[in-house]
Length: 477
View 1 (tube, rainbow, N blue to C red):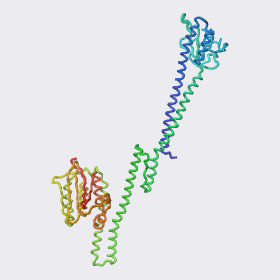
View 2: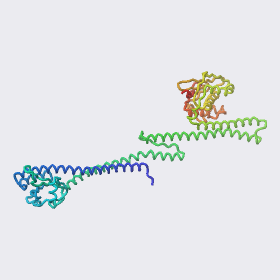
View 3: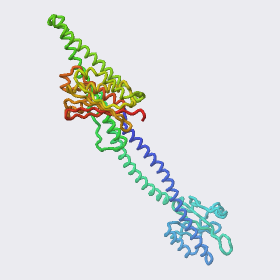
């Protein structure tokens, strides 16, 4: 049988609380019993001394059986709740606090061992019935009555209390404690049960959401209704962040598959159609060369697409730690990229305005990857620049960073396109219609490489001027 985490937590908490109260209760019951008995013993000892002093004073002028002394004893008994016995030196009971004149206790003999114990100076206190003097066992204390004039024992005084009274008082005291403890335990158990169940609720929702993720539903989220800021709240926020990331990844995956299918389908359709046309004679022999050139162009386009996707996979697998080990001159990289694209620049009649420092600017990163960034940005600028216009490149240092900008004059990127230009396979309608060489991965690769370098890239586009700027960490820092 499965036990949920909140049930286990509840059992654990309840067991700890119950055990704590059990230990505390045991200590309290023992301590309270000893306290009650100790207080009663103190009260008896005090009253015993007072009665002894009274009896010694009376003995100077009268006998221990004097009626007046007996009346005093009766009064003391009513006030304190303790019974009093006075005995002659031989142990015969001479007087008692019993209000009955012919008390059954009169004339009875206190056991000799008790008298011997008192004479030895050890004192006497124990639960006893004094060998039948009392009808039931009582807690009895006794001392000798010593004449102050002659220093001899003139008798004994015994003070007794009902032991059941002490136990009854202690039981009342302990009963109140146990009742309060039971109420507190009940409240603790209820609060613990509710609290642990409430704590486990987000975990149950996470488990349910995870099962939905396994079925491909990434729209589920865990509610943080109470806006918790504890560990459970942090876990909930982290789970929802992960869910957002998974949903975005799934969306990108689906878009990726759809775009790859589209990019592959178009050239494959062209190649298949023209090949079949040449084979079945639909295309006249005199036009075969023209359509073979189209087939060759589409085949090369497919090759570029596959190569670009492989490069993208390699870039995504690289770690920031590994790519930041190398150093290179970014100014040299820009110059080499301009030389590589010189043919395209000349074909479009573009001027190049490069503001590059003469000294080397050494930056940290993967030289080949940053070369691809610079190449893609310049190629993108050439592709979308107006014929006869100019592209501008700039390189400068600011703080611990090097900044590279690539600017061209052409059509303004629409505002709604700006957040999408770094997505995979994103191409404007213009690029799709006029530039069949592109596969929509150039800027995505740029962004991926710079992300792996922990660097930033910014883009602005207004009044026909589009400018890309990215950063690199200077090697000196």
